[in-house]
Length: 174
Image 1 (spheres, one colour):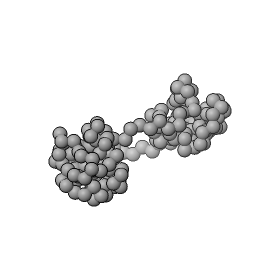
Image 2 (cartoon, rainbow, N blue to C red):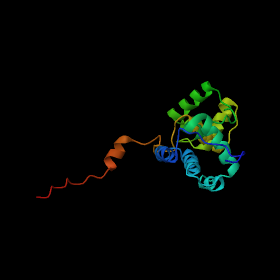
Image 3 (tube, rainbow, N blue to C red):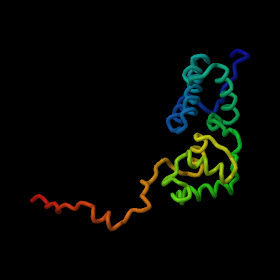
Image 4 (cartoon, rainbow, N blue to C red):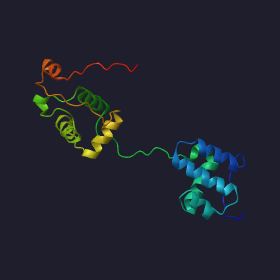
């Protein structure tokens, strides 16, 4: 083995890594496991790296992580990113605002859109977000894109019931 080549752990083999790859729900980890399985099979590092969709240096970095942490080391670590500009208390208030829905008289809308929530957040909390960031906030609050159909505030339930069409009951085939 050349001095620059990093050896792989001896407690794993290609077949075991392929089994782990089949069971993995993380497609990036799967690619990395398959690339390492190719290395165990004796494939060149360049060819194995291309299987994993990476270059040789990146494969080398993943070999270091695999040797240190095993297959769990082949998953992406959480990135810190930019901290959220709303506090936890403000996020709870925003969840309440979204949950209760808009008041047509006050907010001027019958259902929330991202642009409406953007304006509400800026007005109530003094924080400016882009429309795209509103989507991320709603996802963090476990809200989905699906919304109920809005109802006109002046609709009368009796009129709606009277308008519904009724049809004869179908007879069962004999």
